[in-house]
Length: 241
Image 1 (tube, rainbow, N blue to C red):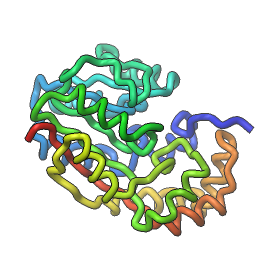
Image 2: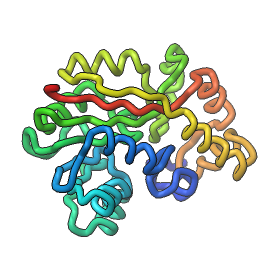
Image 3: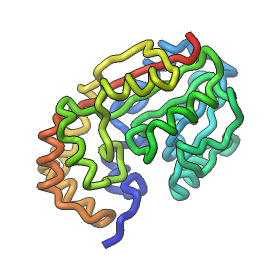
């Protein structure tokens, strides 16, 4: 049984759409408006996937965005749709850009994928300009006591390591960031679940269908997800505010 990156699988891409995350561009727009990013700003899309946010920022705000992703397959697609953008294959804990290069960093459903979250946030701090913003939209657990059990599955999506929001905020503050905005966006996560259930009959069926990409017991995995009571959030942190 192969264990591919689930974001590379057509099943996951069909479920999540071109942005590969709940909420699509609605949360992205909310973040841009709050941060007051403007034309000419330089943004890093951390875990850019197929490059949807890079294209959105350019087309709608004339913002120059660069991308980084660990998947060679996804980077290839991102470059195809963003021919003039700099998009690099790399992990978040080793960002290959100079100090204070970006007005902001977007981590949309990607911080939960990082192998070393603390190091990744340190790297984001390093490459962000003073007064810059870190935009995080991601999965969180209302019952974080079940996260260790969930992590045993090592599913390479933003369900890999949902956040304990209190610990995330403590970590961001410890690395020098100020929390500027926090909002639950659970409705987008619920909309995605409803869409998947409508198409596959149940979440268990969906996860079992994903076995073409990763060995997974859909029923056991979904039971842990239910225990953790997952939701979705938007958080914006500032450097040197």
